[in-house]
Length: 252
Ligand code: PEP
View 1 (spheres, rainbow, N blue to C red):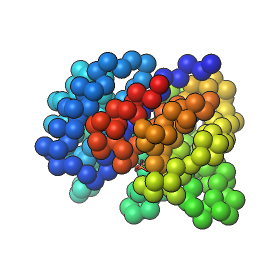
View 2: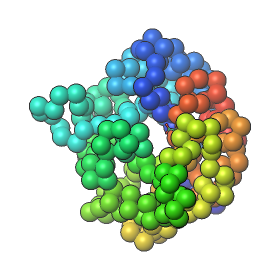
View 3: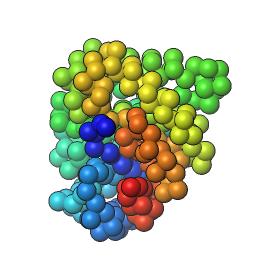
View 4: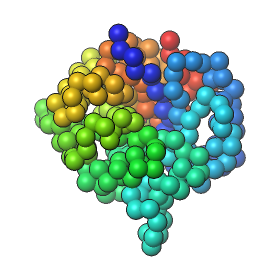
């Protein structure tokens, strides 16, 4: 039996105005007030962080951002630093989401710098990795994960990374309604944990939380959570509605 506390995280992507975000967050706070033994996070757009932090403050719901920039401050128009996220009430930050890798030039090198900035500011980084459909069909899933983990976490030691969360998100399952099977997800999670063990040792590998992401819904969360190496979920579409997200949070 592992002692990892599950984390159910919602990525709201570029959805919801401030009033919509505040309303959904308020409803979620009510719906999950009676939960225990599960960590909960929502990541609204940057502009909604401050108002949502006022709604979730003191509740079961933690606040996360969807990205950051690694410099502390400066002439970097359009960017936001880790300390600024902390000042807006964040505890978590998603780093290296496949949509950022695909559309905004995120690489394993920028991911590596962002993780350092997050950890230095006391944020919990949620490092996203995962293969595309072509890579899976070409039999490259493990080599892609290997590269993303090793390059993304290059030059770190286990002590640096105590707060780290990893999210395995096969790109072909994100927003497609086509979730990985429990066996596919477990196989990838087990492989990621073995990579972490090789690089950072068994104690850290046993402690690190590895979330699954890709078309998670109330209907498939329990089967996924039954897998020994799945420690939670990063949820996109189904996190936008407080009722469906709360049902995922209450997967037990
Ligand atoms: C995501 O955005 O990280 C995600 C997994 O999206 P969805 O749940 O909609 O597939």
